[in-house]
Image (tube, rainbow, N blue to C red; front, side, top):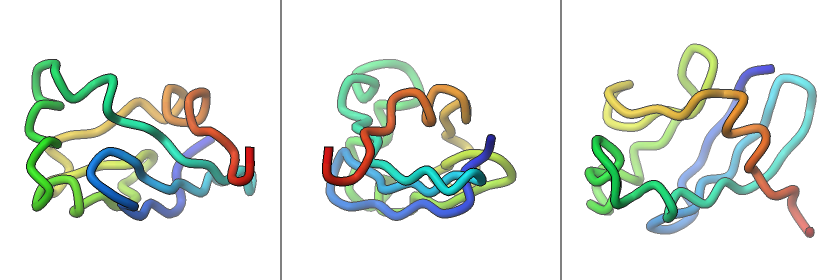
Amino acid sequence: MWVTDAVALDGSHVALRFSDGHCGVLDMSPYMDDGVFKRLRDPNVFKTARAGVSTVEWDNGTIDVAPETAYAQAVPFGA
């Protein structure tokens, strides 16, 4: 399972589409107080969200989330 599309929605949520067609919204706010994820508090960094090789990444790939974590925690649209 991998991320095929990623779009920043606001300062802490990113819309994701996965290789199996699953789509959902990942809330990054629980991570934004820890380590490298602190940089996502900067709106200019957060809006760089994109689909990388297998997962969502920010800041030219210097920040990412494991694809299995993104898949498990992305809330399906409309849920």
